[in-house]
Image 1: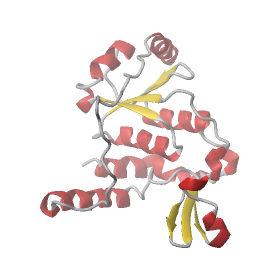
Image 2 (image 1 turned 135 degrees about the horizontal axis):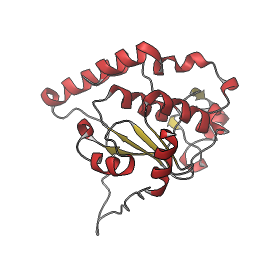
Image 3 (image 1 turned 180 degrees about the vertical axis):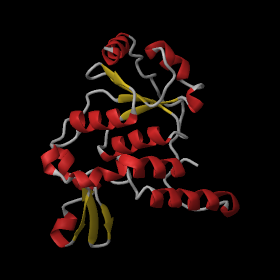
Length: 217
């Protein structure tokens, strides 16, 4: 009953995302190779970021069913921006990655909304699940579950508890990271019979909680 009332209240108070546009006379910067311009300031962050990826086994870096391909000859010539097919081309070779599992998975018509904050291991699990499924999500940060969008969340649900997922496509809202992960898999994931459930074990159980906690330190 409580979850029904929360979902009912969420459906009545869905806040549309703000409209964003480029300022007048804005000129997009030219792309440049990634470089470390301030080693003393940037290297610690790069090293700790790499450590976080290792601790979480790179969960969320690749989509579910990620499949890399190295193409040669005619296959390499048939991909690229000029052909309308994404690929990284280096001379006669091309690298392309796809996720066949997600090709037939349902896609949300409108972005999901996630109230969360960076320092929460439970929010991290939800963000990683959304990345695994390649879902568009509007993040509404609530630092410490008291600042940012926290007051909006309280108006919506009567609580300032994160993570909280609001799906405008189904008018469904819910707390609890494990429930949210399962909802995303059921609603927007491929058929469970099409992949090995072991692929999702970093999102579940004590391992997920402990490593996600270390990753947020």
